[in-house]
Amino acid sequence: MPITKATSIDQIIHDFVHSDNPKFAGKSKEERIKMAQGAYYGMHKESVMSFKEYLTSKSLDESKMSELHASIGEHLNKHIKAYKAGKIDADTLGTHVTNAHSKIADEFGIPHHAAKKLTNNYVDSKI
Image (cartoon, rainbow, N blue to C red; front, side, top):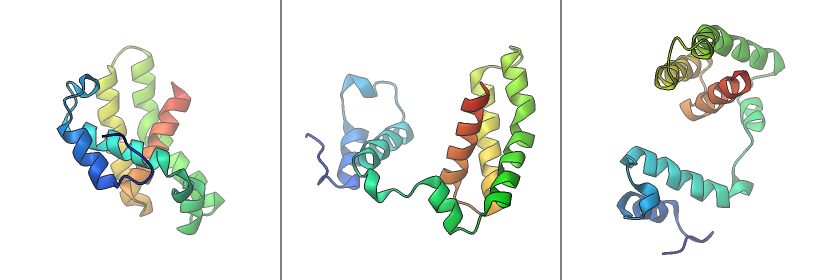
């Protein structure tokens, strides 16, 4: 079934999870759900608040955001350095990033998906 802007997120998730399309081969249910969410939100960009708007709405002013970025660096810089030096592989770095975003979410009281985006962006900017 073609996905349109009118297609509900539940329908897209159902279709992705149960699809036999080769592009989903080897993907877990969780990965397929994330892909479905990406497809849905990609078509509904106008309804997705920017992270800066979101963080500002949560009373994270510039100094708090600087503190948040410093905390991300504290959690991840040594792992990024080890990855660049070939001492750890991408999967191990991914585990450290996941742990960091959980700690950041708890530390700053922000949703895990917001912390995940921030930590992933941080790592991407350093690698």
